[in-house]
Length: 547
Image 1: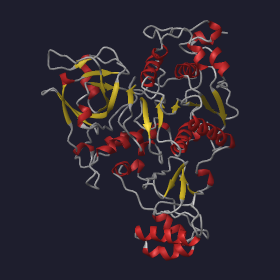
Image 2 (image 1 turned 90 degrees about the vertical axis):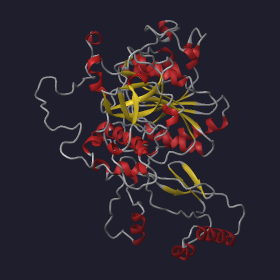
Image 3 (image 1 turned 180 degrees about the vertical axis):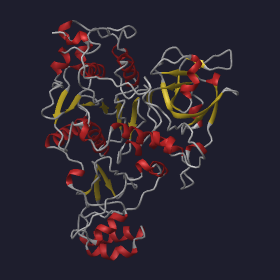
Image 4 (image 1 turned 60 degrees about the vertical axis):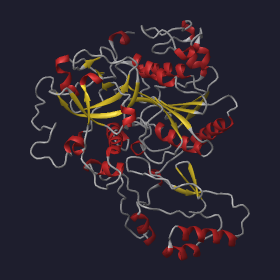
């Protein structure tokens, strides 16, 4: 209401609208911190009058007298109110996530009446280690990046953030974006991490224009990007060529009018490291932020010299000869570098900023607050929460919502991650998560469908949905989706990938009698082939193990 505070890098002043803050136990706690602000040479009396008028305007009668007794120049007054949205209600309605916003009750001699009041609004005291911890090198790097983005002496900066799993890349990106939004109207964000996406459900590569601060984890700010492709996997280890094509396709939509922040995968060992070198050469960032712990030996320093000389997965180093083309069929050139005979020169001159995280357990995936698969599930719940009607506070089960009916022959269909016999395709589609996409080719079918694609297209994704039923008699898909009707008219392709609907969506189907649809307890894992195959990525292939 008065003064200014900073939350996760973003400064909130009294002239700005209210902001929603989300601080679940799955992520580091948000901190509200008072910051200095300009007083426009007001006297102490004028400041008190201004603060009193602000409190009166927001109907704070009981606390106004006590607040004004403690009022001092350059202080900040914050009005806190409980937050209840349709998305959070939907997420909390699932028992697995009902506790994520719960404040742990503090007891003991240090617990004051003021603490009790704060706890009633969802705010509690925590250990300093539960909040955002920034090392000195992180602060220095962020200051340098902010200055580069504000001055733009050499054009709009392109900032690529890389590092191993659980090292804090997403947290760094959110904090950096929030700081930049204090100075700039918007920032572009390129998501290249398929497993831990920021603004979309998992399995996507996307480009989004960010104009609002990120004051919560990904499931609280699911939104439609400017450009998005559904890759259909949480990892690209099975098809790196299509992943490169996908990143290239999305990156081509970047117009270089505002700074760009790029998030990358935590797969930085072996093949993942080679692929990251390819991505750096493709995107040609002006700044590389390399986050790593001191004893991490699998990731060399990404100096300009190293990027120029080292071999990538699909590209050659400078010593291996000029790399005009990709050494795989179907990927002859980098479209945005058409006409360049040696695209290696485009990477020369990037600024490398090496930082080491400060929080406990950095870089150790086993010590993460929650498993990455749980974060993916809650992100998908955040997306599905957009299906809840805004006019009611009651949480409606998904099976009670009316789906769209889509004729088989109106859309093309493709299963991305595996080969499925045409006679079994509908079994795999039913009760599945699908990308709602648009391909350039017109979908034509002489019969009543279905229309099956033989190859996976790299095409625009307009959103996601659940095929909650397949009507074989009427040849209809029944699809639940929050995508608005005007965008649904553009959809002519359904892509089914290896991203599955969270189990809790099936097990928490309220109002059903008897056996729960799509859920069984009679499954025998002793049968050969019944369990999931586990890939052992740490084992070297025979051709790489020879000395």
